Image (cartoon, rainbow, N blue to C red; front, top):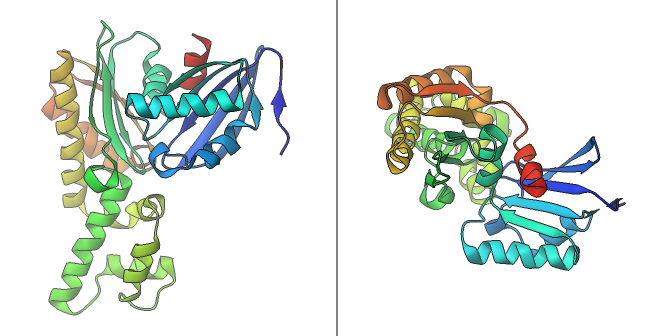
Length: 284
């Protein structure tokens, strides 16, 4: 695959659980490319290098889901230097890029993300960062598309065991997956990726206000925890991620619960290109 070459180019890469976006700026022109999901904990060095070597920037920011620790950042930095020995490189996670995309480099605010996974991150006016969630689908991700789909599916299986009849929701899932019986779900779930499971959250959200309220309560409580950590008052709260963007009824429940939990919170949906935060970090 051809590389993008330029003597003065700035690259921002944001890798998440659903997709990876790369923005390459040369002067006033920005080129956008989209790739498959790229989570540092689930990706090999070869996969990361394959993506990086498609570009040759002079400055870059690589913000990947799963990049939590100093060791994680060092790993990404080493790979970047293998691909671009002379480039100036910032390494971080998709929360770094998300915060900068929504609130700039210094403004205080809280970012609530519910997509394939879920996490809440915030920044104070003094630059302190606080977060809750983001532990991945084994330990966390409550309120995410993955959590909604898996929680709903487990409830549907319990109902099947107790009544002997598949619910309307379970029948919808079977039709979508082109499966003939609930027993085939055992094999499907064993081989499904996190994103493949999360893709079916809409089936379980439909008409299930209890599930929506439980997920919204998790997100609101984590949001409140970040507000306490950062000692914010009447914080700006931005909602992002595919689940919150694509499901208005669920989003309304989340907004209501956040406002109940955090009096004075200024909550809004954010639909921008969060990879622009990575591009801005590379330019800083």
